[in-house]
Image (cartoon, rainbow, N blue to C red):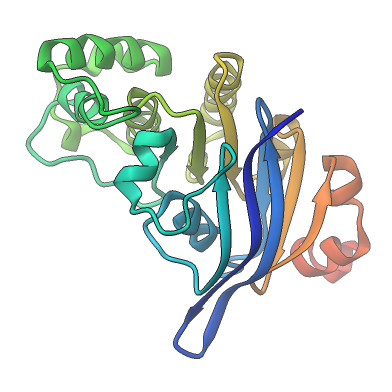
Length: 244
């Protein structure tokens, strides 16, 4: 398999804090890579570095064979890097449909130039994530699970080649988690490569082809889920020494 994304010795400093420290890994096309680690480990910072909302202090980010390290977020989005956000902020005053249409207008390539065409694409993505019946509701009226699905629909409307999912299952119950896992699998089956951050171990283990573990900003493990989750260093750092 060929790598769609390569992270090469990437570091991000905030004043005296090193949030991501010399991290390197590759993500293959068609793969689901799960990223786990304790709170504050640097996982969301890593997603910001890949998507372009944060510049690295050093290192290189290569997407589809091209360095995108110096490109702003909107340029990366047009190349095919999409993301969801851990803190969900729908566009206020807009319907669920038009929230998703915004993604279609500004996504891969140069987006969809026609508003009606963007809305048609938005309806297809709302159906894909199971939000069709809320299309004409104000996005502000959605509860937590609905907003999670809206984040996915907005990102998918941008037609990404690589989708970065930041805790899309946080706060959901077991039934809702299973539903979101099903949606993410459908996304991968549609040809999109996925990097997903998640704390729900059972969910991330069943979903991921590989797991990457970040601790204190450093990569401490990268491999198949069973091997990673049984690694003593990972158990002590993330699952607790009592499990070691």
